[in-house]
Amino acid sequence: MARLLGRGIRVALGTDGAASNNDLDLLAEARIAGLVSAGVAATPGELIASDLLRMATLEGARTLGLGEITGSLVPGKWADLCCIDLHAPRSWPVHDVATAVIYAASSQQVTTPGSPAGVCSPTAACAPWTNPRCSNAPKRGAARLDATTPSEDSANG
Image 1: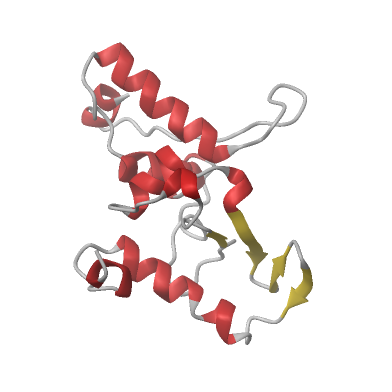
Image 2: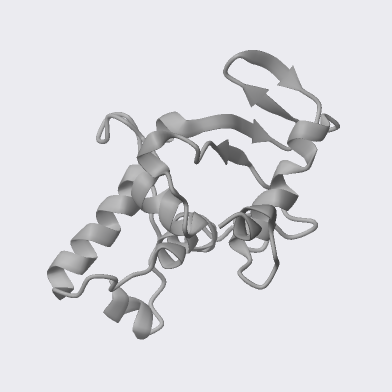
């Protein structure tokens, strides 16, 4: 896959439906893509986690012809957001958020699936985006993913 990317070929990840993929777990698909790529290339780290995360988000939208309206957190684009609890034992300690999401987290750690209309919690009814706990989540997530922005987590090691 890294050779395809190196040649400028768009590579996207996704799940196609329960009829041919019984769990629809995009995190698992990204993890498998990274592991298979490293195995085929015989080079660990052939694709880094941020490449895989991009393939599952922005490149997926671009492949579907939707890159101008969704796929990244940019003002004016549509987005479905989710929160992933990285405090679970399987993903701790977190040295790099993208790596923890792709290689250590599972879909069972998604705590807050949501959409532009509201954020839904598995344990509560949909809450409006004005809920401070949820409305600050995208900003905190963006800060963690942006290596140039100091975040609370990076200060704590």
